Image (cartoon, rainbow, N blue to C red; front, top):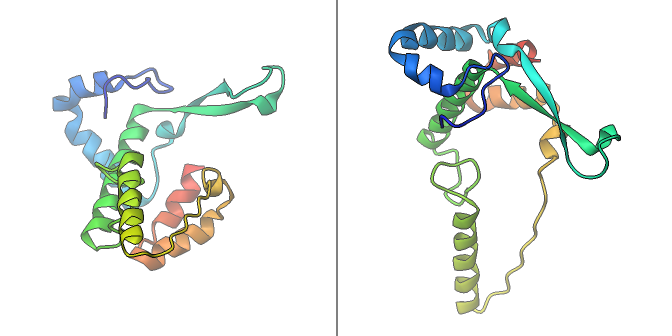
Length: 170
């Protein structure tokens, strides 16, 4: 994790964690592994500082702001470990499309643009008609029923404890 990220609700920075790593690595690893085993975060890791960020318009109207949750650094580290393990699983079991660029290491919107450009040029060379439909899914996750998502995750990779984890994280 980059050291220049904002400190969490407890004002601990990633720089402090990195400096103390030789001493805290064992207990930190134990806590993260215990979190995965029990499907629960330590209560103190759930505390966040909520900061309202102005989107646009006047600051007097609440709808013009969005909340920013400043989580504790240890919670962010645990989340990063979970993401890495999940991503490794998806790659190892060939569950990701080779064309996927989002949320994939070393891939970006630029990678996707190159991929699409190549696809269009090949289609043109083969005199094929090509259409592109673009959808803005940035708010899609806000409407996902998490219980259904967790059931699908269980069916997808046999994760049952995640259902408990979801309820402890709220």
